[in-house]
Image (cartoon, rainbow, N blue to C red; front, side, top):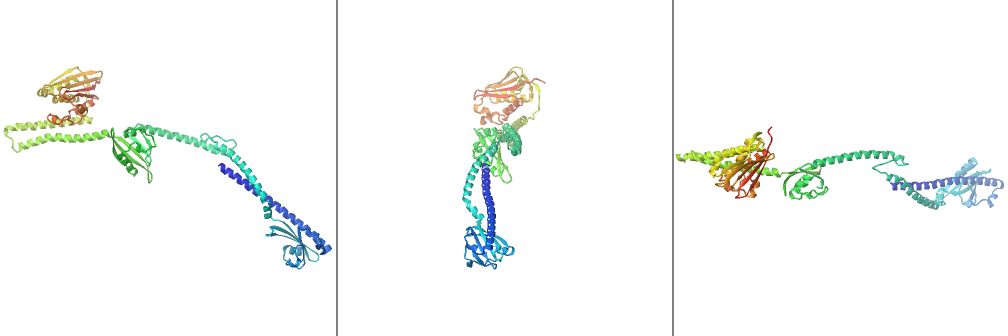
Length: 556
């Protein structure tokens, strides 16, 4: 802006000086021309009067001034005398404008421009009494000549004025622009002496208010968005087409196992695995892409979706979920299906084989009872397996009847041991119950299943002549059921998995022991049903202790 003002002032000043010089020269030229014409007219009259009185002899004297040219033309146009040229050598002047006018009216004037001398001539003719004409020609400087004459001083004057104008323009332009440059755009105020800027400043103030309001709203939205994304357990990443991260919540950094990370970095700084790269590249191609990413502490499902504009991908939205438990559950489901199929197939195969032998009459009459017993035993095993699966499914789906009755644990333990007395006697295991009379609110049926399975396992996996002890105790607001045995024990590396369905510590040995492999799973889910916990303390060859803690609720 300063430069434009400076150039404008210089240009205006220069053009003004040039125009002034031209105008003044033109005025002087007009005045000079009028003066020359007046002098020529006066001289012509005086010379004509002298010729009338003295005749042609007057023209031969030296009374004619040197700066005028006198020509005497006869009535026929022939030159009779010329003060500068030989009369005989001059052409007929009858067609000259001033001569024609003098012949008609007595006087005539004209002016002509000479390109050779760049001067203009003023002519005036006066008719004499004998019909001849005296013409006087005076020369005065033309406008072009005058301009050329003053060109040098004009250029010097112009240079001086341009220099002065440049200095003045520089100072003036700075003074004009300085207050404008000093406007505080955040808090514009009226500038003294610049009333024209008042509408602009008012507009700036209103725009500032509007922008401030919009920025506050944007900031508020950003804070709400950050609050929502930071509260998510899932990961969310938004990246531009160059895969530079625009926003990334802490969940994404945690799930991808990234350390320090700042927005604006490449998304590959979060994870640089081939699976992750392929997923993002496929999304950049314009289609939704999914993959399972394995990290140090689990498995992550990555869903990358392109943010499409009219005809291009303008960014990516990446959603990350922890699917470790889901994948583990899926693995457990497949293992459960496989184990159930195997466990069902074994008794069914036995039943089918035995029944086939009986049907074909290949069994002696005295052995029929033994084969029938085998069928009944395998059928009982099959029924127990199905009952356990149904009970476990109900606990899994939380569809078991919600019973809320007072259960006295000591009496329930006595009842369970009484049901298992025959099994204990066959194994040679001494079973006993001790402790306190503790009651709690819950499901008697499910608690009975929990105790039954713990005690049943304590008998099955005990040694001949071993012991099984059930102890009932309590602490403030907690009932404790402790089941301990002197059996074969559980190796430390297997304790974390014994509550899995169909999990066997020693498969070869466990096959010899009757059971469905679901007992401890039922224990785990039965305890969870009552919002309790179960702990295991065991070593191989030194027996096992199960401790179940259950909350005691007041009877409604």
